[in-house]
Image 1 (tube, rainbow, N blue to C red):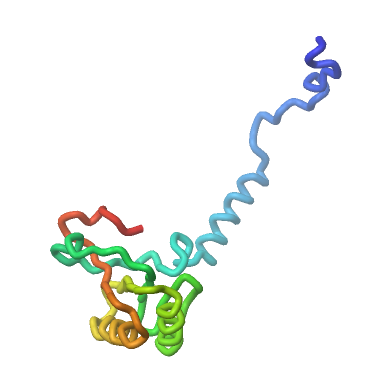
Image 2: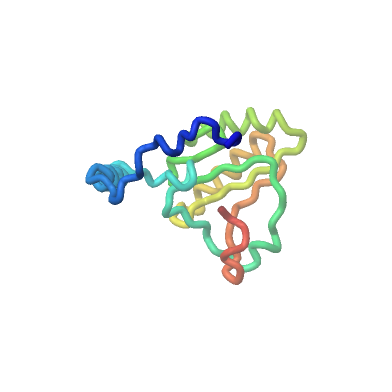
Length: 149
């Protein structure tokens, strides 16, 4: 045939009938390494698997678009687009970001285990840095699947 001039398919070795024992060993090692060395940040960098937004009635009614977003997992662990920050580093970051945008607004995603005083500290630091609007992220208990990650 003109379409298969070298007939390479006839010179190939036949496919094996069963899998190698090495296949099962490799599969077992992969499962072992993922279970031993797996990270809680695999699904969403910056947010752990156990991160949950608080529920609040009417949360969707007060939703507004924002220019900046941060995630507070613990009191001493705050994530921005560039990576993890401490509270002192966050104040510098807020001042830099407030200068970049004309009327900056901030969305703070606070985990349900973080005290409300941490949000008020962040909100006051953001207002002092020049942010016009600071909003805390929450989920509406009537629509828990709407929005989020």
